[in-house]
Every structure is written in C-alpha cells, then in structure tokens.
Image 1: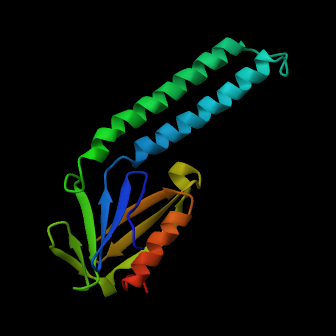
Image 2 (image 1 turned 90 degrees about the vertical axis):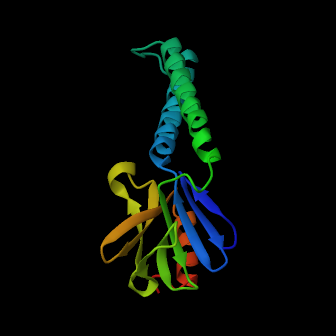
Length: 173
C-alpha cells in the first residue's frame, strides 16, 4: 500500500516503513447515516409506487411516505455534516493511534512506546455479522495483553488491502 486508505472513520497511513492506524471514532455514525439513507430511498420508492397507482391498497398516503423519506435523507445529510469537523482536526487529535513499525519490528503507540514485537502480533480479517448483518468487514490486531480493531470498511476489498499491507511489513505472516 503506497497511499492513505480510509473508510468509516478509520485511516491507514503508510509512511517510511510504518503503517499508522488512526481511529476517529466516527464509524457508528457513518454506518447509521448509510442505513437511514437506504431507508429514505426505500420509502421514496414506495411513495412513488403509491402515487403512480402501482400499489392501490396502500394503508398510508404517498405524501406521508415522501415526507418521511425526505426527513430521513435530511437527517443523514446532517449527520454527515456534523462529522466533517472531526475529520478536519488532523491525525494528532484521536485517542486511538497504533503504529506498525517494520523498521524496529514493534507495534507502537502514537508516542512511539512499544506495545509488542511484530512477530507476536496476530491479524484477523473478519466480517461483522452481529451489528451490521455482514455488510462491514474489519481488521483486528491482537497481541499478548490486548487487541484492537484497526480498520472497518463496507465490503471486503479495502480490508483485504490493509491485510496485504500488514503482510508486506511482516505482520501476520
């Protein structure tokens, strides 16, 4: 991986022999906004079908469906706008930053404090079935004394790229 990768509030920043994992703590709001936006689209389609007469025995009016869909869409957009100040703060602000330092062979904190040797760090790529019904996959690093989810993404492609970058640096191989 030669470029920064980000999804759902998680960022992976490759730098000279290191990978910096930044958790901005926004993934749950991003996921919530996506779910509400999908619901808004579904309600909008149902409202269109009711207004066109395709569905004739509707218990609710088309105007109610359109109004509810518009409300969900506006809510989703507002949630996204509220997230933008967190993104603009920079990588120094978040509490959770882990660094995979292939040069020194250590998993480190943001300050450079060693957490574990890289040969004792285990990597797993999983699908989150519990809270996201299989839509989100994540990458977890675990070591003696702790573990942390370092990346989440819709789908599996970006998480697989993170796994490849970790293996290139000798983690989990």
